[in-house]
Length: 287
Image 1 (cartoon, rainbow, N blue to C red):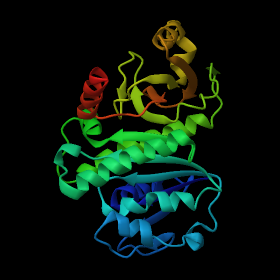
Image 2: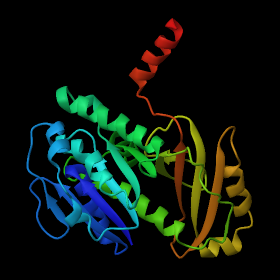
Image 3: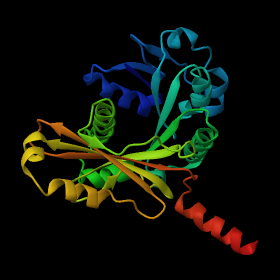
């Protein structure tokens, strides 16, 4: 059983979405929450105070082991406690899911806190403090879903994230009909996920630069697998290795009427924002 740990309101809301699947144990850390596997955090007015006072989480994490997905957004003050919490989970196999808000709507301290969390988590992933950092962007998710009503906005985005992660986990633990998988490279620890189709119309949840690896999980209707003689050629044409990118795939038989394709992309480089890319380019020219 995988453990989902949500920190802050964004992390806890996503953790709640996993409760519909019995394969996960859910833990939540936030202000104003009570109940089973919940850790109540006092409310502080700066991220530095959360970092200093998040405290000993031994009692909360006492029964946690194995694989963990730690979920956090970056703009809330409570995200300041993320690294302290992660340090207390070093006995586990940790991946982190970072949910990027619409940074154009942030200002002041919230903007600074989000930027710090975004880059620090990438550096910690690359250093091996935890296994992998998955980046997802709320504006990009909205673009995939199309027009999303205000009421239920976050729920719709969170459900897309959670259902995709869950199905990738399902197929990672299901025997494929055929695959050419190999282990991911040690240095490609910054990742995102996405969905696609048999026409290879890929929709990633974050615009990842410098992709080194792509992995596809093809969930195909069983009858189609038995009768469509063009299917194997179509899939292999889709996933042929691109320049400097290792592409792998697995094909799985399902009883669903529709076909589904899920994907994981990995990179080894820091994901700089557009304005910071331009600044770096200017600096390089000056040098």
